[in-house]
Structure formats: structure tokens, C-alpha cells
Length: 314
Image 1 (cartoon, rainbow, N blue to C red):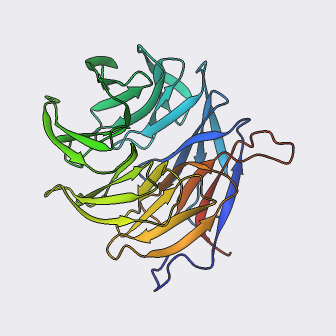
Image 2 (cartoon, rainbow, N blue to C red):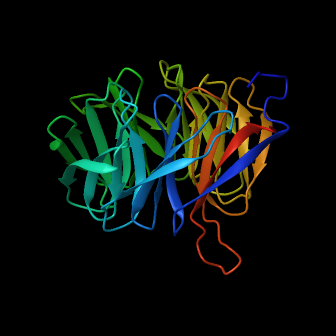
């Protein structure tokens, strides 16, 4: 995957099928060798991916949820532990080798967002009722619950785990200290609701995607906006930084995924897609981008596929 002046040209996507309904979430494990997908079909799947696209793809089904698996995330320190958040009000921890559920927590609402603290000790979960729950991973019990009086969307810790970010329907990003969850800052980021957030793996920036169709890039130490990315025309649903922090991918209901250079703000590539995208995520080691959306097949049924862009023609 040598970087050239146009690093994403002449690469192609591979399609992965297995789910019966649309895929809501894709996420890579810490080694970049496994990808998990969560679907409306109430299952998650774990796929072993060869970074250069060779070899047979094996997948394991994680079965047990009674509603849509809306978001999932891997333990940042353990390549085979994965957490899933579902509309069935539970959060589950799975062993990706066996496909078995090792822990389960019953929470108060329909879960839509989940993220691990970078040291792997805590999990944060957001639900449809704008309630945040923090789970201790070892005991798998809630240690903190807080209900907010405004719409809370995607959530994230910074790289050191000392700051916690909430994107809100008010166009702000609320920054809290961790673990106290005391207000530290309110970043007035957009003129419409903020839907998604990504943290630069180098720890310099965070990026926010908004209903106003813009992606804003913020200096994490100064809390100042560095630049905005303006290529999308629909509300931004999902964003992700590449492993070096040099590129950002963003997607919406536009029929392409935009890849822009973080430092110049310029688009370097666009990946065409056939439907609105729900999830984009870069591999933590390679320039491979997984993405999933509202694809339909020719019978107008949900397709249940995801794709990975970045393979060289073998």
C-alpha cells in the first residue's frame, strides 16, 4: 500500500455478503485483521480479512440479540473481544474466536451508540432516550448513568481517556472531563445537529459530521476549528480518520464516499456507492476503508452487504 501522489486511484472494492438485512455498523479490530459487521438482522458477524485481499474469507456469526445490532466496537487492547449495542436494550461482549457471548448487561433503553475507552477499561453506551451509561468492562456493570435534556448522538473519548465528547442535536459538541463527567467546554460546531464524531489516531484533532452536510476539523488542544470539508450535500452520517491521520472519509445520502486530505482540506478520491451510507471505518494499519449502507437488491429487499475499498488488482 505505498503512498503515491494520488493514493486511492486504481484500487477497488470487495463485497462481503452474509447478513440477511442491511448492515448498520462496521468496525476493525486493533490488529486490522478482523472486521465486524452489525445488522438489522439481529446478528453481528466477524470476518477475517487478509490486508492484500487474498485468501478465503471466513466469518463467524454472533447470535443472541433480539433486535437490530446498531453499533459495535472492538476492545482496543484485545484483538478478539467485541462489544455490541442493540435495540433490545442489551449490550453484549463476545469472544470473536468462538462466537460466544461472554457478558451481557441489561440497560434501560434502545442502544444506538457504543464506544470503548482507549485503555479498554470502560465502555460508553448511548440510547434513543439520550441517556449515557458507562460500563466497567471487568464486572460488566453500569458505574455511571446520566440522562441529558437534549439529543445526544455519537460519543467518543480522546486518546488519553481524560476527555469525553458528546455530539448533540443543538449543533454543539459537549466536552466533559473523565471520569467525573463534569462539563469542560461546549464547542459550537455547526448550525444544525451534530451526528457523528471521529478522533484522529495521532491525537491532534477531532472531526464532527453534521446535518448541515459539513464536516468540521478541530484542534483538540485549542478547541478551535481548523477547517471544514464541504463536498457532501446531505446530512453527514459517518466519518473516520485513516490510520496515519492524513485522510478523512465521510459519507451521507450522497452516492459517493468522500476521502479528503486532512491537512489541505482537498478531496483526493471519491468512492461511488449505490445508497445512503451508515458506517465508514478505516483499518488501523492499512489504507483499507470498510463501508456499509442502505443497499437494496433488484427485488428491492435490503442487501445485507458491506464493502472494503483499497485492494490493489491482484
